[in-house]
View (cartoon, rainbow, N blue to C red):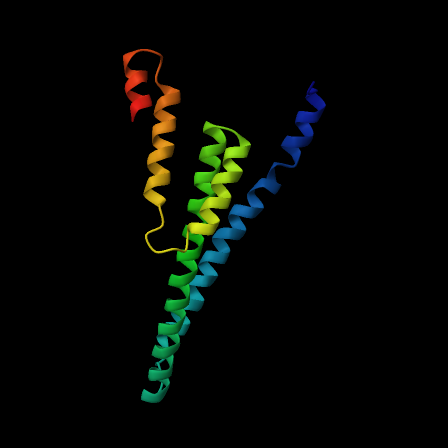
Length: 138
């Protein structure tokens, strides 16, 4: 149970809760000032501009690849957790193994997995009756 004396300690230390937001705002302002200072300088000689363009192109290619990998991992985990919530941990483990082994294949059955998950979700969510029999057929 919370005692009134405990509340006074929290109120006395309330200023601490403002340190993080104020620090974040100050950091954003400093970043804005630094970026304006850097952008105000010239890009340099034509050779330096060409090198910078090549570095920028390589960095963007790397980031696109990283985003693709992160999206694939997210998808695999999303499907795995969906199967776990719908069925059981054993089926989730099976889905995880299947997706890990087939996710890099061209034409991998991602849409088939999503369709199966959707069908299982509808089947579990629909009450018994005619609609449930249609969901089982699907």
